Image (cartoon, rainbow, N blue to C red):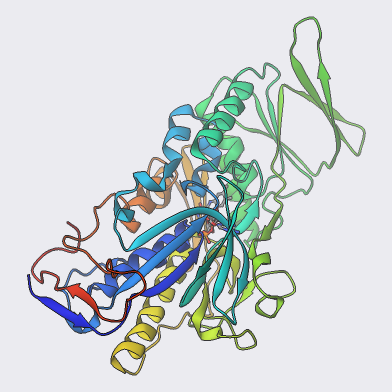
Length: 447
Ligand SMILES: Cc1cc2nc3c(=O)[nH]c(=O)nc-3n(C[C@H](O)[C@H](O)[C@H](O)COP(=O)(O)OP(=O)(O)OC[C@H]3O[C@@H](n4cnc5c(N)ncnc54)[C@H](O)[C@@H]3O)c2cc1C
């Protein structure tokens, strides 16, 4: 195989967070740096050698794998699904390439001036400094159970999910879910659908469900109809003021009394508090990069806005970024693609002197929502308006709350490129004259 000489060392891209946004950025950037179209473009043209560039991506994540966050309501309901929803990074074929390094650590500080990150490794709590050329913040929002597991390893998460399922199944007085936002609705409906004999009650303080979401009353009514059709009982316009836990020393069983402000109360064998609490995870960034709520201020190229040192070398994608629109997985992956394209353009500009052509995000993001409610889904899109049914569930979520859709879209199951060698594997300190193997131009982009 002939070689293409590249008079540059591999560009070091550091990514905080290996989920939808971080993986979308990483894999599309690898495509581009091999000279291919980004995988999200859906095209499969031969490699263009003029677009190739040596790159080394380091993903830092506190978790030891990719967790399909959208599937959480089912992961805490079905044992089989719980096994499937978390895949360790070492078991994801697309990441098994020398161009990607994964560090199981939390980013604790970023020095944007020096371009050095401090990370704390999960295994030994040791701090390590990682220098980089480009940084991508894709660490999302800090969420707690029941919206997301708090475990950092697959093993710990599975123990927690299986114990949760055991408690749900043994709840003789039924399960009460407090909070009918999107997460509470999906949890209640998945519980009832997976365990049809279980009594499931969804409680909400307002008269309408989804009261904090930017959706129409028509959509709220449609969603409520589907919740009730799935067999979930609802108590609306009732504010819970306390939950009393009772243990029966004779039987060893635990039960709960859910008390309302108006004096009413209901009994439960298990209570899920689905009132969402979340915060951006960006406290490792300088305050100049953040808005008043802690989201990263980005421009339409996804780069940080001016005001932070080296802003053009720092990007944010996904839930952590301040950008219009409902925080969605599709938006996170879309922003990951934009980030990959724009970093690639900058790399080529530095390497070959081209004028970079940036891909701009559209700030006019129309409201859009899809909600899985048991065997059906409700959706709102600008083109189709409001829709519901089993076909809508299949379209937006397939039969596994979107796991296969995301896995296949990211192409996580595909092996990386044949003959891939995007990083300089020679003397680590002498990296200014890397040999980049020429890629076969008649091969599909996956091996
Ligand atoms: C229950 C539930 C259901 C949902 N359903 C839908 C749906 O149906 N459709 C839809 O489009 N969206 C849905 N969403 C929203 C969607 O999941 C998010 O928009 C999406 O996860 C955002 O992706 P992300 O990559 O930006 O962040 P995340 O998926 O949150 O990933 C962030 C990653 O960063 C890591 N991390 C965090 N802090 C650090 C740190 N300091 N250092 C290193 N790593 C760090 C985390 O471990 C994680 O792996 C749902 C969300 C929830 C909670």
